[in-house]
Amino acid sequence: MDDTRKLVVFLGINDWANVSHGLARAITAHSEKWRARVIVANRHVYGYQEDLCITDMSEDLFIARVVEASLVMSIGDGDYRLMYSIYANHFPACPPIGTIHVGSAYRTYPGEYAKADSSLGFKLRLIGADSYRFAHGDPLAFPFLPCPNAFEASVPPVESRKRLRVGHCPSNANMKGTSIIRKSLADCDFADLMMPRRHLHYKEAVAFKSRNNIDVYIDQLNPEVGGFGVSALEAMAQGVPVVASTQHVTSHREEIERHFPLPPIHHVNPNGHDLLPTLKHLADTLRLDSLATLGWAQDNCSPEAVTKYLEPLLDSTQDSPKP
Image 1 (cartoon, rainbow, N blue to C red):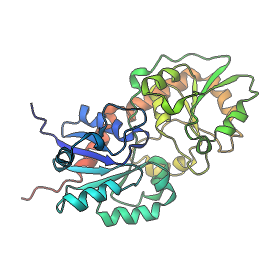
Image 2 (tube, one colour):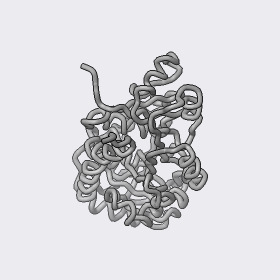
Image 3 (cartoon, rainbow, N blue to C red):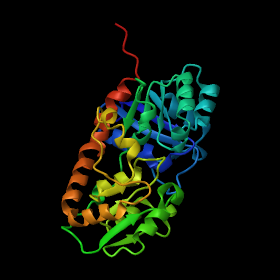
Image 4 (cartoon, rainbow, N blue to C red):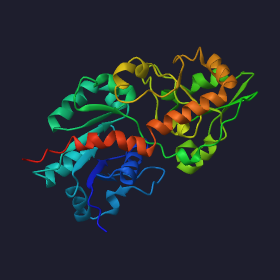
């Protein structure tokens, strides 16, 4: 049977942190109005099966995939090369277009990207929570939550533990403050730091299984980022409490919470001076924090919740039918 739902195509050079694939899975599984595909120029290093990679497709098939779309969302943290190329060469009259900003490029040059997005005529701008402070006055910009593919990997919480097992993934050690985390926990008498050795090549199932062996996850300590990434949401979907420096999210709590409640992440200063007291508190309240963490994730970034949030935003890009 043909799927008659409208199609949104997430299109870009790369899909950083697998964000668009998570959204596409959720939309296709749970929306009555929309289905979604992701088309990238370069395959993700983890090799997600959902990738439609241009190098594996004929040009005719590639163009056919995009032509049938009712909306095309540019992905890859503001890298518009693929979008420019396709629409310049093939689509004098193209479907509505939008974009997703979730990385450091937009955070570094928000003004330039705002001008570019406006000149391209984007009808929807989805912005990561830590960067929404640059765009919250734009009526076409909305904060959004990625949809982690980790809910089935959650495990029952423990009451407490004498030695806390603390996880951290140094996928970008400088950006994530890994040296501060290592130094803080080096001589800790109540917690052990656990980090993967080959994190860059971990597949999802391996990462989720590894995270089930920890009690708390430290995302990042960074004065510029001041937010949370996909790995933090994955941990929360597994019921693992998260610690991070979230100053650029909490400072705009009112604007963001007009759209969804902020996650119960335990904020610490980027310099890490309050990291150990925060972990000590978590060691005593582990079960309650774990339950609160998983409950928030189920209510706000599960596939069903993300689809419910995104569906009216996707609808808003479509021209109203003429009377």
